[in-house]
Image 1 (tube, rainbow, N blue to C red):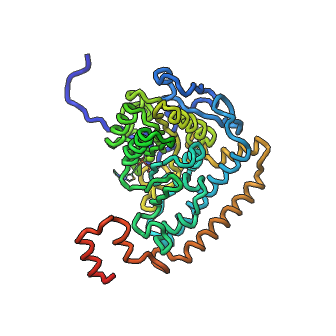
Image 2: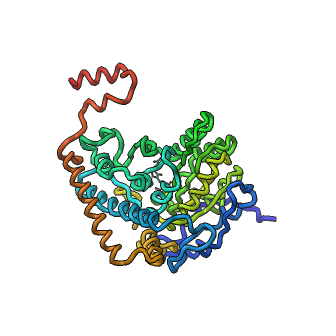
Image 3: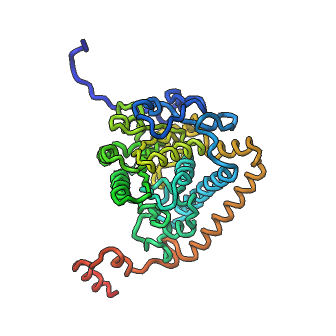
Length: 410
Ligand SMILES: Cc1ncc(C[n+]2csc(CCOP(=O)(O)OP(=O)(O)O)c2C)c(N)n1
Ligand SMILES: [Mg+2]
């Protein structure tokens, strides 16, 4: 019998705090190629183990191994590398632009580039993502113009959203990128609802929900799983576990579940964990889930195991809550370096070509930035018109806004 006595309140604590030595020995990393690939119509009860393992394709030597390998050509992988490098260069320039006062806010993807870049290539045109603020790779990998993204970040006269959204909260129906909302977890209910509507109307398009580890604690996440499993909605339920929710470590939202993927099991939803820093593994698992959705087999839950190497946003200083060198100790490495090494191993890439590509990509990003800045930045140049505050929001302008507009004289 358990010892009776005073009750104790339990608060999970991260293993290490600032000043300590980073330690990821509690994160078991299975060998690349060791996790089986089930048929898409597998009974979810037969693959419970996949919610506790990590699907990996790239091994330490840069070779692609195991049943999830072999899906992408040299050209597709070279393109994937270019997308990730572009996102990284874009981030670095926009981070700097924020420090220069050209925008009020920015959020980087450092270390997580493979997740959104590879995922986009597993979807078809017309499919719809419901992203959070850390999936700009969905746009980059769909060749959305960088200049338009920058115009949005600068809230300038060419911003397609006319300064009405926080910087980085893009929106593009044509590119299957639903308007980003700052209210996290709403993306889950919306994506499941969109997928249900697609099925109800006999359409062919599927959707993808996006959430971070921390936000899975929101009730929207759990409600969405009920609807997704009951109605077998054609949706891919993505959880990006980057170990941190601003200053809160992932153990808080995970509770006693063991892994975030395990959340799917109680709903009878097939749940897989994947190495989020492995472009090939992310693509293979996302493709598997997309095929299930298209075959009317219902939702799939995917946990991407990755690490947020940068600060949460330009308003955050991670040295206040985690050791400075923690990202270097992260056992799954850097997604760009890993794909680069794989392409060298395949004989289609080299260190020289990589360095040259870095220069070319940076030049392209700088050219886009120059063009965007010619349309204005936060405090200089062209701005959206004050009129835009009143237009494009309501089919019929409510009386109080009509009055305000009259007062503004526009
Ligand atoms: C509903 C809601 N609650 C709180 C916030 C404030 N907030 C912004 S980002 C964030 C952390 C989210 O962490 P996680 O879900 O792990 O995503 P990550 O930033 O790591 O990608 C919080 C709490 C919010 N935006 N929305
Ligand atoms: Mg997180």
